[in-house]
Image (cartoon, rainbow, N blue to C red; front, side):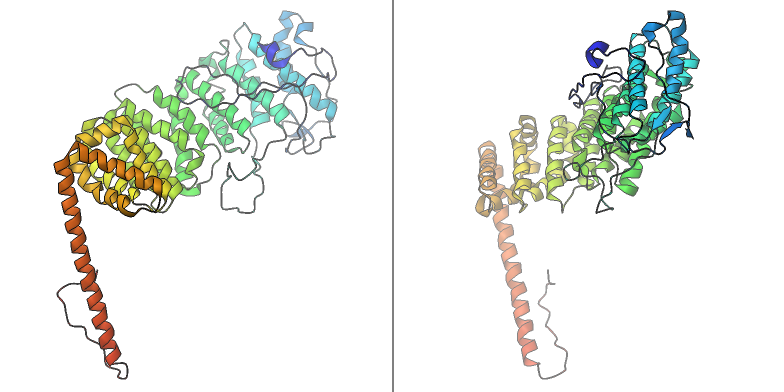
Length: 502
């Protein structure tokens, strides 16, 4: 397997040339359990290429290195007894950082380090002896030195907005030729059966996990994809860290929702949580229900919801499928954050609502149907045709249609005025036709109820016309009195007509 990823590379003490080989990968997969094996998102390329933004030209633990940077012997060239020490030496050698801002600088040394990193990945993959504490300490040191750095966001004209996936080009880290191999090494080390979690937890500790989570704000999607897979494997392997990881992710979400509304890795973190929620035991703990109410539902508030809405919807539906009684909580939470003045978000909310209703049982639907269909009625009469059309598409779902039919005596009086107005004069032909179809469904289902709603609608229309006439008469009388007193400074008094202005 490792040969398929790396290809055959020439053994040399100096830099060897290899053929570059890239694979797309990185496909997002939602809903895997904490023990599911997730493969690396990208194959490690043997090509050089991009530049890297890091400080210093040639550093070891922050200090400039004057000594020569020469390749160490290959693992194939030393006896088995010496491989352990050689592994540690190679790890220490890879703690040296290079300046990738200048593509012409340290070319030989960069290639030596890249080849050494590839050898480390191959060694970890094929290891058949438990890693010692000394090895684990060296591994964490090398990984921390290379990965944990200050993220440099790309300068943008509008500083107040977060990185926009559709509009902005992500800041690709020029160090990726080395970073990718370090991430691959860390992934294989964590996943290796030779890594004893009871021993490794001393080195892959809370501090390490927290710094790993900080990297999720990287603009480089390739880096976030690796981080997602690695954190998922850490969560699955190190059970002792699970509560801390959930709490740390919560804190990132709190800061994002209530303070900054800027973070690049919300989608990837939600994807991890989707698999975590999928593995929650029943009955759900109170801690998990609070996470739904205090964290997931408020995530519908930020303007950049589109960046992570798919993953958020999956998490929400997972909770409802786990415990159907939470449907009322989830639906009322959506209504609380409903984007009245943002049509694109409103369409997303309606799509999410459909998925939640599909997992909702009749008793739970009954508890929230009145406020829910008051909101849907407002959506039906929206001047934005996509909002009205998306709301009408709810009737295409058989489960939702059956729920509506079972509770038609409550629901039809709420939505009938909206359907009737659409059927009479909505400007969009598709909305007009769909409204007529749904109107006919109710008429065929319960003609008596339909006639009652129509009669009430007509009565309400007459009352509205009467109120409108009285209002116009009042304003007309006011204008006449004002016209008579234009030459005087006296205040104009309007006789009371028995009703207030509406």
